[in-house]
Length: 151
Image 1 (cartoon, rainbow, N blue to C red):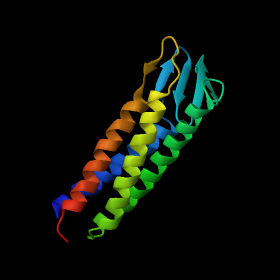
Image 2 (cartoon, one colour):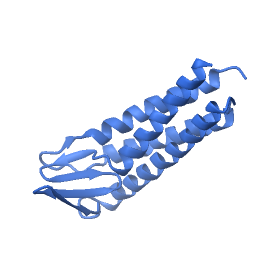
Image 3 (cartoon, rainbow, N blue to C red):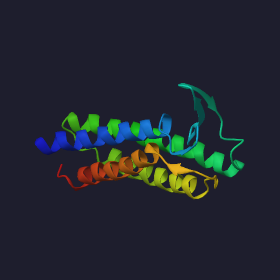
């Protein structure tokens, strides 16, 4: 019984990290610019204005950014469904397998987004990149715990 709530908590934590990392997380920072898969922002004097990704790098990197955003949101949705089913005293093996596929997809497109990032002077990693990595690990752990669980 306690294992059930632990799995649900891990799945929800992973879902929250996926959502925050792709929606509001800044993966890289350069001076006053913050870059993430959903776009970029320029902040100065406490005021931030949203910008797109198109002017920063090539179109392929922008597509990988949108794919990373979409994969993170799909993984978040599947992990919330997984947590709900576990909390409802079910063993959702099919949902867990869907979660593994969603997390693997997020890993692949996220890696492409990182590898193809533009080489800007002063570019350094920020919190969104770390959140995404932790979300992948926690999500994989939750889905594996469900698949190893007895019905």
